[in-house]
Length: 403
Ligand SMILES: Cc1cc2nc3c(=O)[nH]c(=O)nc-3n(C[C@H](O)[C@H](O)[C@H](O)COP(=O)(O)OP(=O)(O)OC[C@H]3O[C@@H](n4cnc5c(N)ncnc54)[C@H](O)[C@@H]3O)c2cc1C
Image: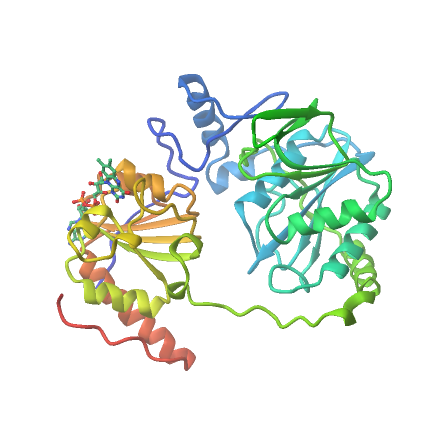
């Protein structure tokens, strides 16, 4: 069958009547500010979106600075399969937005990088593909980071304050450096200073910018009105890599058993990276389940599909169900009611299959297929089966008869 792809809107489609659920903050001229709901803020956000949306527009963006840089700031991030997560992008954006015209933004990446570093605002990039989310190498990463700090003497070092990777590395860095100021769980930041919560979020403590800044998620808007130079510094890569190997002196104390990759179908919905979800437009549950199996995706559902008894209550996604943060959310026959959209606000790529091109889900989606859910599921199953056969991997689950 031929799939009728209606719109590919990620960053291209701009709907000024809708608050983008993934962009709750706006940027002011003098720094970074928390998003304030209201007409003006939404209008401003749309304006910025309009400026930065789309590849051609990005090409038209100016360089952040054309002056000779005399100092630097450093942003540190880990990638997963070449991609930076939203939190890392926010941290890089913070470094970029707070840098003045004579400050260079250097990005240190642990893991492969396939994202466009110039669009991220980085001027110089040091990529260490041998590390990253797949590898457990805390001493090497710390040694690499320390070496880069020695070489650049950055004014500030920005790191995502996440549960693993950046959060751990940042604290190790703070502990390893004498007389260095460090702020963790930073929830507000601008050129004048930063803020963190204290006493179970009852008090907000403010201070000037510390040298090491571990930034919480969703503090900064990643839309930038300019580009960085995006130059990979191979010389620094070689130097820092060598330092990392020397830094592995404690390697013998533990053994890295590697990462076991679990199929998304075996994971809790709120942890799954790939979710296939069914709504009232899915009649054939066995075909749907076969596709989820074939794609090794976790299964979610709308409340109507759950109320119908097609799925269990713990599979419901939305305001009165689970909130999920999958990289990819593939929705079949879900209209996109506001209660459902609440549950997928943190999903990165939303793909929807719906007969109705005016369904709210279409506006939320990055890719929409206007077609019958069952026909698309059958077509996808054939495609997955073919791909598996070509790669010599296991056959997909047999498609069951109509539910
Ligand atoms: C207090 C409250 C809390 C709620 N909490 C939640 C919640 O947590 N989660 C939740 O999901 N909902 C929740 N709801 C319900 C919500 O308002 C919607 O009613 C519900 O999400 C709709 O589910 P749906 O999109 O599957 O069904 P529908 O609204 O019936 O939409 C079905 C969609 O499938 C499309 N379709 C039909 N046939 C096909 C086909 N053959 N192929 C492709 N597309 C097709 C239609 O065009 C339509 O867009 C809540 C409601 C209230 C009042």
